[in-house]
Amino acid sequence: MSFEESLKRVIGRIEDSLGIALVGMDGIVVEEYKRDSLVDMQSLGAEYCTLLREIDNISLNYGLTKEFSVTTDKIIIILKRINKDYFLVLAIDSEGNFGKSRFLLKRESEVIEKEL
Amino acid sequence: MSFEESLKRVIGRIEDSLGIALVGMDGIVVEEYKRDSLVDMQSLGAEYCTLLREIDNISLNYGLTKEFSVTTDKIIIILKRINKDYFLVLAIDSEGNFGKSRFLLKRESEVIEKEL
Image 1 (spheres, chains in turn purple, red):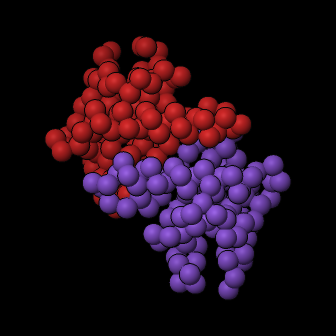
Image 2 (cartoon, helix red, strand yellow):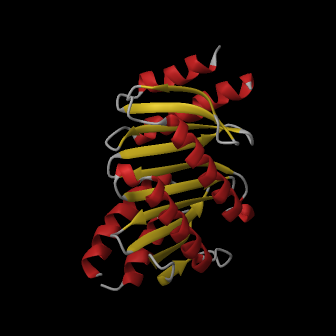
Image 3 (cartoon, rainbow over the protein chains, first blue to last red):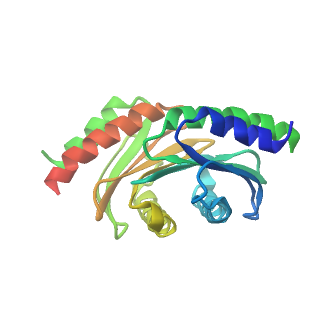
């Protein structure tokens, strides 16, 4: 199965999703899929990669960062780490289903991990 | 009601909680309460304050950051913004109840907001 299918499957099941990307720890997007053309998954991938590295540094005593999420007035971003080299980043509307998004990201990250 | 009572109330209701702090946007802890003496709420407050500022900068187009959370192998950290000057930061065990923690933080941040 292609990465694109995995990304579409997550987006397709979350009503208020805006976009999703598979990103390397160099900040470069491997694959992306979006519903809302205004969401820039390339920038998001690069910025969240930098954040993930900082969080990894801060959290050294607590083991590897597996997930992090940011909620603002307008958007929710969820980053799900796949392995030490890749992560998924998902953008949904701030009114979107946070729990379902986390669940789907976790499940799909396991599928993608086998393909990487 | 004192801030300490608010913090104790959150910690008391989350079985796997480790510590909580009320922190200013200067990174300085106003009040803290912890169950696990190994968790350094002062460092956590300062580090997460820096992260929050960075996330605010990244998220400029998406409005103010209201919440963010980090899950590692050993710990979950949830930051809940109270207003532009203060936030709560909660540490729970990685197996702890994430949903309940978010709920209690939201409720208590509204109580604290009135007292600030």
